[in-house]
Amino acid sequence: MKKVSILILFLILGGIVWYVFVYPYDYLVTMQVKANTGTINQTIKLWNTSLENSELTFNEDLEHLSQTLYFSDSTHIYDWDISEVNDSISKIKIFTKDSAHSLINKIKIPFFDTDFEKRTKKTLIEFGELLAEDLKNIKIKVVGEGEIDSTYYAYVSNKTTQFEKAGGMMRDFPLLDPYLVNNGVELNGKPFIEITRWNMANDSLEFKFCYPIIKNDSLPKHPDLKYGIRTQQKALKAIYNGNYITSDRAWYALLDYAEKNNIEVTGLPIEIFYSNPNMGVNEITWKAEVYMPLSK
Image (cartoon, rainbow, N blue to C red; front, side, top):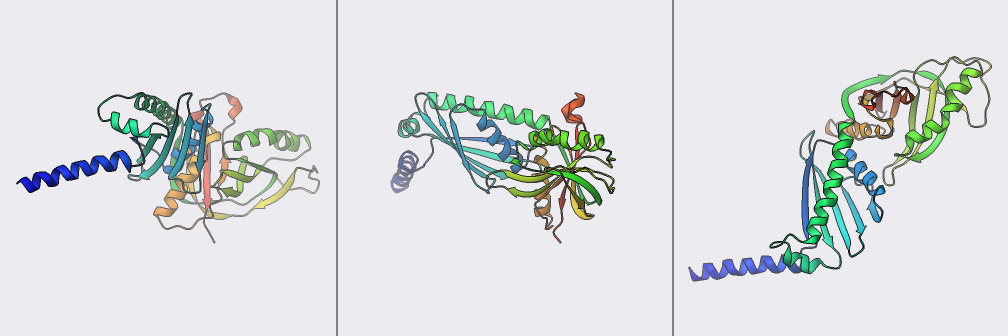
């Protein structure tokens, strides 16, 4: 019995030593949310831009991000780990530490409600509220396999980040709808974008902002305006409702669906827009069809 007590004591002391001197974090916060990995990843990045003194490092791995937050009296490190629980739920673990006061935090946290712990909770509650608000304002329904129709179109090329995609469209809109109509071109469908390059490592995009038109022999010429043909093709389809700034959330939903169902896709989505953002209606009523073409 004495040997068992000594062994238990040894294990407890060993655990304490490991936690205080080896374990690299001070405090762990865990959340479960009804969202896919890509949506959470993008919301973390968006939230980070709203902070005054913060740096975020990430790569093409959507599940892991490292964040450094600079306060007046300390520097906090947040290491984010996102994992899927099931088809609709994801778990977020945020491993946190105070880079200059880690040892004292580890000693105090099991017994006291430390300033580090209070600040971490407050900061991450703010993030959780932002995430909840974002999720409330979007709706994504993956329909499954569908088909994109063929069309002739006019387009403007653009390079932006994912977050700036909608801004790039607004900037180029006058060169499409008003310019084409004023020059005698007949429009033939809803505007759409076709992603030609998507760098998930830095969220950069190259895309064509397009308007379907009726082809004729006297199309107007402009140095920034070009013409092309969208061929009929099979694709995975989703319906997105919400602000077009965050319609890329549907891209991740389609990629998840493709992976789970062993479907090879190009990774270059096409979005067809059915709502006019200038009409002043509730954003959740905005509609876009989002397609992820199948690989040939």
